[in-house]
Amino acid sequence: MEIKQQLKLSQHLVMTPQLQQAIRLLQLNQLELRDEISHELENNPVLADELTDPKQQQAEGADAPLPGSTLAGEERVGVTELAEQPHSIEERVHEKQVAEVDWEQFLENRTQQQALPTTRGGFEELPPIEANLTKLESLEDHLLWQVQNSDFNEEERNFAELVIGNLDDRGFLDLKGIEREDGTRTPDLTIEDLAREAGLDPEDADEVLKILQQMDPVGVCCRDLRECLKVQAELYGYDDSEIAMIDRHLHNLEKRNWGAIAKDLKVSVEEVVEAAKQIQKLESRPARNFTTTDEKSIAITPDVYVMKDGEKWIVVDNDKGLQRLYINEALAKRLLKDPQAKEFIGEKLRNAQWLIRAIEQRRKTIIRVTECIVEKQKEFFERGVAFLKPMILRDVAETVGMHESTISRVTTNKYVHTPQGLFELKYFFNSAIRRTADEDIASEAVKQAIKRLIENEDKENPLSDQAIVELLERNEGIQIARRTVAKYREVMGILASSKRKKMF
Image: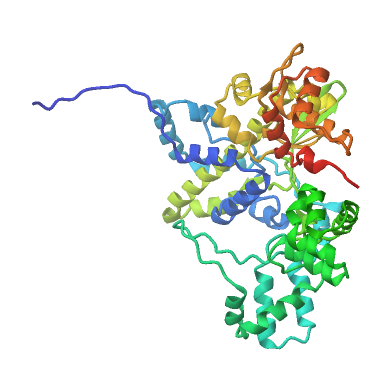
């Protein structure tokens, strides 16, 4: 047992706050980045943006935009390089030097830089068109308006509001229990429970519920599809046999088992078919024409644009709506004169520089990755989805010299606007499907081929999954299993052949 000193050289990765910030910014989409910038502007007094009053900028001497500026004496370091290099002794010494930067001298040297104009004119002064769109009426608002105009008493109105508040996105009454955080579920509710909570006699609850079910849209507030169709059929004057088919043979109607229905109701098959035609006219989803969100205001903001200039494809980043950040030199200089505030302002200046650098590095990384995708998927951009090639994260990572995890962060929730449409960057990564003669094809291209076959099929004699397998192999040389066709069909929301068949 002895105590002695030993010198050992080792390398290990240290996640500095600056590196963590750079990685976090890299995986944000356009809207999230705007929120992050707004948050930093609120918490960092030396940061300013181009939306500041021009007169105030001129009075305070706000600095020019710093999209890629670095600290005095620093070299530019990429986010990915930071993530993959060890935190060496030289880097720690360099950080110490950064901490000792003479900020007063640094700001003095920057006063000669010219600020970019910040005035806006023309159409940019107008509010965005989304601000002028009217809000769509939700199903809840539509029903509450009818309840307010009815002759319900206070208890009945309270009960009606409870029922409307428990509707699902189809317009059906959902009284099932909800799952707690510990995995247990709350007990299912009943109509009587809602009545007692509203102070209504449970014997009157069914009568109020029937009135609600006959409001516009008819069939709303029902507990299942059978009740929904039955309410509509009774209100629209359907005959007894048609109501009986809904009440007792809804499963046979779905399977088109006309014989079983005819045998039970003791009617001819022709009568069953005619009744089924009438039942198909009923609405199976009362909330179809209503929405809880305003779809007109839902939009995807692309992070990059891909455009063709002559024979070359160009990748341009979308900086619209992103504030260009400044260093508020006048304020920083005044605060640096206060010895008590000098350390605080020095830290805020370092944070501002790292934020500006991380945003610029994020922009360059997204453009670099998109350019690589464009290079590998030129045929897609020229000719469409059918020419999408198989590609995985490793293919892009090896080309641009980054780690696969970095490529994953860059392509998640990032969208690119192309001549073929708007796509998430993740869309271009597909597994390979083997072809007999030609090179492998991307799985997304196979999905589109399946979709085209189903769109062009005979609606009275739709293609089975096995028939699609045979057509793909014979026409396009694509070798694929029947279960894979079924999986792709379900992903695209396409029914099986037995349910696609048009009888009428």
